Length: 388
Ligand SMILES: C[S@@+](CC[C@H](N)C(=O)[O-])C[C@H]1O[C@@H](n2cnc3c(N)ncnc32)[C@H](O)[C@@H]1O
Image (cartoon, rainbow, N blue to C red):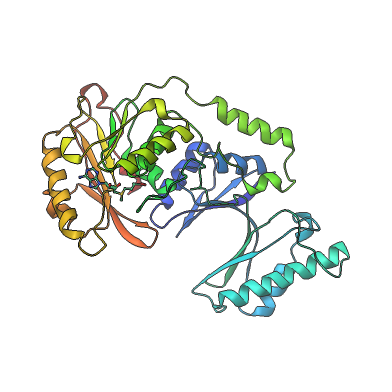
């Protein structure tokens, strides 16, 4: 049986998540700010948790109705068959958000929804008091223009928590965002790949997972696996199918360099935990020594932004140096993710495209300089054209 799910996304990445869902075969996609609705069965939701590289979470939409008053919110919530989904001892914290709605107080909406669900469960289970000591069902109430959406989180921890990153480094980007940068570049594994300022290695490792067809959720579990909705055999089959679809002998090269010894130690450890050490060439090396031996590569990097006092001068020099270095590699495509407002001027060239994205709350741009395609691959699709 099919249900409505929604994949929540960072702002600016809705189209990327929608395309991932399309490639996974899910239909009836509806894209909104920060979320993509789609239809799937319960096993499909597990597959999405396992395979989506760029979404934050997968939520199961259990109810939608209009509410202009707290009474309507309470009654609309209580009318749903909560005991069909939540066991007697379920823990059910409520998350909330409200945009352009009469019910604008998020804490008030959360407590009304909590009360309505508790009332319904207590009635159905004939309990006067709910223990809340069992499995966790995180519930979201969101209001958009007075339309209430109630959804159960099937992911648990955010999907960026892949399970390999044990160090955060001074300025990391989320694994989901790093994967999005790689997907937006349309890098293909037959082209060399480099991140010469790799920090904790996130972009290089996400590229390696994409290149080897490794499902990003294989190292972790999802809350829906403990809901009791799916048989253990079915869960095992979906996980085994994901394991089996990995390409065990991919042929690609990824270099991950950084000037900082600690960053290199962290990248090395993360690559090992992610199971991709064999594809990565990791070394402590300053950007000025970047000298790939192969043409037609793809460089994706997230250099320092210079947000802290005193760093801006160094960062400006680094961006100029990057421009100079890449002048010697004109067949390479260069993709830079930064919040620095002067990046293009310092790099010395306007990007062909740039895309506004957020690193947490920091507004950033993804600057794209497309090199020529390798001669025998002129038919390859151009980077992200149909995503803009
Ligand atoms: C914003 S961090 C990268 C974070 C990374 N994307 C991650 O997820 O961990 C920028 C990195 O650039 C490195 N860096 C700064 N100057 C450099 C240079 N001249 N050559 C190579 N790396 C440099 C820093 O050591 C730092 O690790």
